[in-house]
Length: 278
Image 1 (spheres, rainbow, N blue to C red):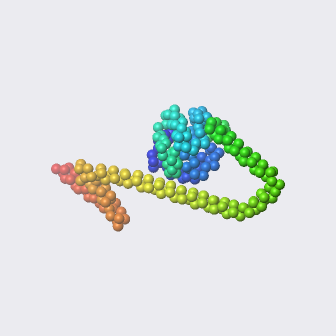
Image 2: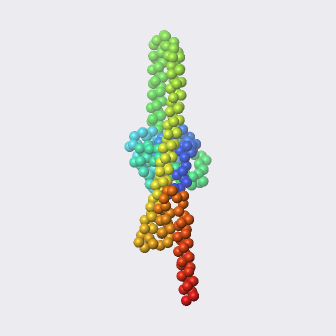
Image 3: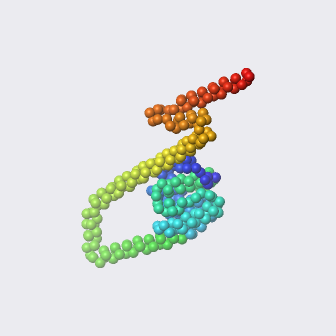
């Protein structure tokens, strides 16, 4: 079970679009950015899908907007992790900030985990919309939205009925705004597309930098090990440092390193043969 996976695991190379498509398909949502899952509600429901009955869905706030409300969701998620003995650390302070990379990494881990449960298949009778409606705060927010919309409708009808020319005014206003609305709509679509592309580029750069730092740290560990007094003059250490300190103008120092090792092996074989003759 994928409770803990390394940062260079293939799970962390799953793209933003694939993660969003996975969430939207499983939970019948329409997320367009990974930051929209920063409230922790999506993660709670994914765990509810993987382990029905473990998550107290009536406590999950699907309308969480403030950091306080988001943190409450993550507390619920942490309690679920504790029940299931999942040791994955939840970096709540980072996730609630809504930063794309932090949220993407956690969702990548979550996908890997859910895929490891029953082969990633959803429970046959699991209804994500119905289960989501069990979120106590969501029902209240939906009710208030409906009341607000109905109030707007009533006010509009009243304003029209109070003026005999109301219908004419509305039609003239609509005709005058058609061109402007169309232009604004096209601009909004272009802005969303460019924003999505920019987010993808930022995520790619962040992942590349993380991969670079990962391998640099390993090379640095090897360098420190090869510089220890006990190993510094060993042939293998000398060969390793030959590769590490090779200049940029050289394509590869592997051949020289292999030659160093080969010479030492040759010397050792000669000394071993002389000992046998003695």
